[in-house]
Image (cartoon, rainbow, N blue to C red; front, side):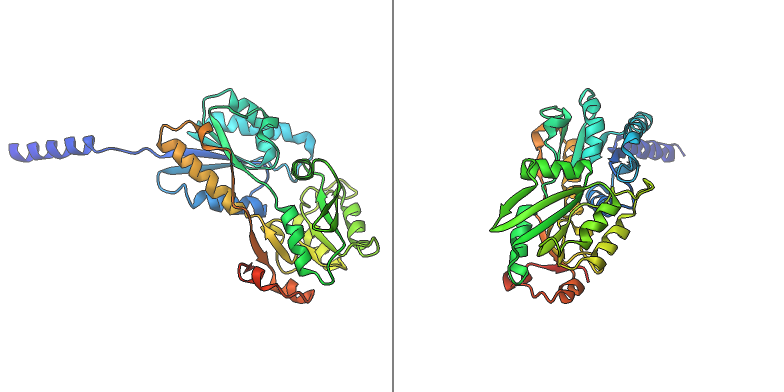
Length: 330
């Protein structure tokens, strides 16, 4: 019996000496909402990396659907949620989360990784903060317009890029086009239009051909409101726009590509934003690295994504150099 207890004590001591790795909590504060295709995509990217040993928590600020006068209160709720759960690291998804919370986190010691940022991080007072780093999002509009010239026959002379008037859209306008709404790319006159209301958006779509445009790109369309100031569902916007445009529609983000959506093109994927941000978070939580030293970084440079049904609808055959690299949603 004495021998038995001695062995038992020995096993217990061995178990106590074995290293125990505690689960680490990562809070993802999303600027938008869980049903938004971009958020779904980057969450999958995060979850593909932060698996064993991590507890993922989410908070949605819902700033695509809520009016701007409620954004600060949602940010305050997100801040309180982080105080309540005391995460080991925070991931801030997209510009509004960083815009409203970046400065507060910069005053803390909590490591923070942002993703999907279209603006310059300097604008959010997080540039060179030791505890903050992240992933930039740079829409491939100029390159995409050049690709459109290879797809549309005869070669387009005028293209309209339609965007809502969200923070992201305004940042794209400033960062990509230095605030200019009319530019020339690869011999094509490109006009950018920021649109506030659903009725204005509809009227623009219905008059595209009359206005002399040869192709259109539906960029961002997620904050449009109707005449009653009610948010218009993004899937409704893109489906209606696809059905009613008289000229070929293209997209810059994966969520805009598909049957009853756009033809596609060179697009950005939320998954890559999430994956890279999660890899940075993992490095921070498993080493002694200073977060600032890791970035900022720019994610995947984009990939060709197309809808077969839309290509067929507009009688477009992809050039071999594009077809060899393309993937399809249908």
